[in-house]
Image (cartoon, rainbow, N blue to C red):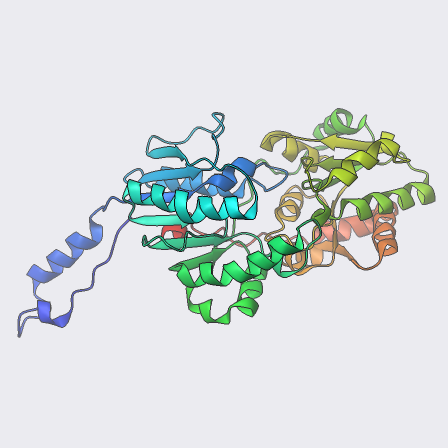
Amino acid sequence: MGYGITLAPQYFPKGSAFSPRYFSLVLHLQNKQLTMRIGVNAACLLQESPADTGNIITDMLTGLTRLHPEHTFIFFYDSAPSPAVQWPENVMQVVVPLKGHRSWQEYLWLEWKLKRAIQQQQLDLFLSLDGRLPLGSKVPAQLLVTDTGFLHDVAGIPASRQRAGQKNMIRYLQKAGEVLVLSHTLKDDLLRYAPEIEGRLKVLQPEVNPAYKPLEWEEREDVKREFAGGVEYFIAVGSLHPRNNIMPLLKAFSALKRRLHSNMKLVLAGSATTEGTEITTSLPSYKYRNDIVLLQDADQQTLARAIGGAYAMIYTSRFAGVAMPVYAALQCQVPVIALESAVAREAGGDAVLYADPENLEDLANKMCLIYKDEELRGRLLGKITPPAAAGNVEMLIG
């Protein structure tokens, strides 16, 4: 990474402000590879998966660390990282143990344990990927915000935690040198919350993994047999968490089954969560449980096949930071029904069929409509446009 250096006028001799000697010095400094020790709050990597988060952070850090072998990256975790993820040689992994998930324990970890670890590593830059910063640290910091659900009273997040998020986020935003977000929806959200950060706020558009691609007819038939016994299926991608509106989706699917008497199945691709216990415990007694397929812990290739073989995707999350499942489905040439939301609009535009989030019947109606109307399905696919160019991961380090 080149670092440009501007010399003040007093560094130039009188009468020769643009002498070849000084041009040579400036060019040398601009092209010199400086090495840095960059700390990364990588605890959020432990919750990464293709279905639940899109592996966005993992993919970004993989690209960044390989792009800059001259820098040393120190990843800080709150528990042991998975050995399955192989990082380049310029990555060090440090575990700073977190003893529990109560508010005071998380505060102690962030403001004392992590801060001490940062000091010990003598960092030049700290990159936080979970929207939080140790406020007592004096190391220059970049902040990535991936979620603003705490601003919207999202289901499944305790009110106390949402209030804490609202209180602390403004301090993190003020502390950061630059703030990065994954979508223009997130940018607008933060600007309504903290308009003073506009000059330091940037959008880093994530890239859709190339594994997501259209399937040929024979491939799609194979995938249908693999995941749904050879029949057509809808797919919903995301953890079984109340914020993803899984229960309303199941009710809408029940309405479709009653009306159409079809053998259509519903694939739920995502992990079980503590907050979603009601969802998982209700499935054994769900009337159409034999038509529900749970796809948990799928790797990127498996999830890409499952999405590519679907009749349509149902996207029911409204306050995600970025609608990666929508981008993935459209890249696979699979139509999408989504609950109306800014983040879904940003991802899908006119290529998505939107349902009223306040009206369960509307979601059921849209699912029935796309099932019966092949021409509508074709029109939606015809409106798919290429996604915006992915942001440069170098934005993460300035």
